[in-house]
Length: 247
Image 1 (cartoon, rainbow, N blue to C red):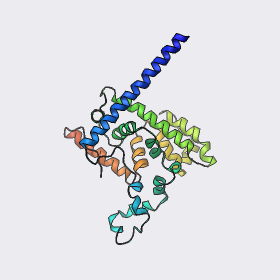
Image 2 (cartoon, helix red, strand yellow):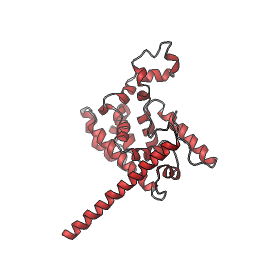
Image 3 (cartoon, rainbow, N blue to C red):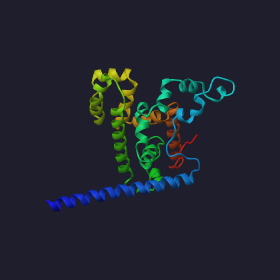
Image 4 (cartoon, rainbow, N blue to C red):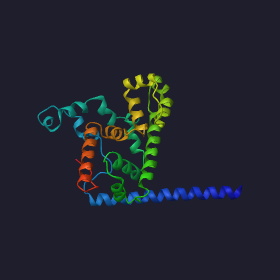
């Protein structure tokens, strides 16, 4: 028994050390990427956070109104924008989930899912073993889901929403699980539960849209579409390392 325990303990230590080494490599890759790409951000700010200084001013006056898109001005004064700069427990689960992760993991997820870069380009930027990059991304996706699930449970919600929390977790784990009709009706009316479902469901191809809209807010889906077009143009032109959009 003692020998088995010792072997298991040693194997666990090796696994922890391996994860630390992978994280350290990604840290070095991020710093090299920032050095090569002046002004680049590891993860974007939300539209509300980036325009925070404007929120307390009269955006419609002559000094500031012409600088912002009219739809953005409306969005900044809406409840939607407040969720990106308000109390942490009331922010979107995607934003909270990404910020709860270590930076190397968050950057890996963002570059692959939202920047739409091929895994070969992601691996090159972050100093990953190309052969292991896809498996590391799968681990990071699972970690992101775990953070989002925990944040969803920690979010203040009414009894009706909380009664669906365990079911929401269960039906988003399996690609073959069907959503019960009563839960579908609830999510059609409840933005918070619909957002939680989007970031908990890793299959189906909806994670990039959930991340971009949940983290950036206004203009998130448009940003995602720009990145997809840039990635497609880069690959068709022989380039697989399209630059990250920092504007």
